[in-house]
Length: 177
Image (cartoon, rainbow, N blue to C red):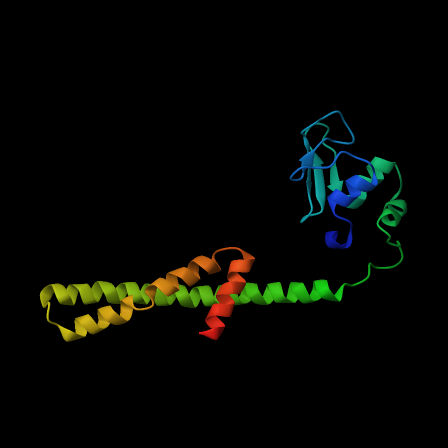
């Protein structure tokens, strides 16, 4: 299987074939008269036309568009049928970083959610103690501990649940703290 990132993006494929460019992955189907039924996804490397039901990956797209065989379609992308595509070390590095970030998000998110849960429970129990005795020093100490830093935990949880850039920023902030 050929990685879709090893192939040209849809924008480049359409430009090289003098087709009307896609807007947000949608546009005119080159196989039928549909003006809005065509959809292409760069992440997955697939296309589909809701009007004529043409579908497939980027290689199948070139095969259908140029009416050529598989080897010729590979040639369009500068690939050889008997040779695997060159390995991009930068892509491998980025993939490893993304995998590490996903693992960190999973574990850090679990830890932060647990700490948030504990602080909420402590706030509840401290409130109960302080209702019984407003001068309870332990109750005030518990409440002070639980409230201090709770906003930061909420902020970090929001960042962890956000985009990849926000997750990286949360990682940086937690490592420097």
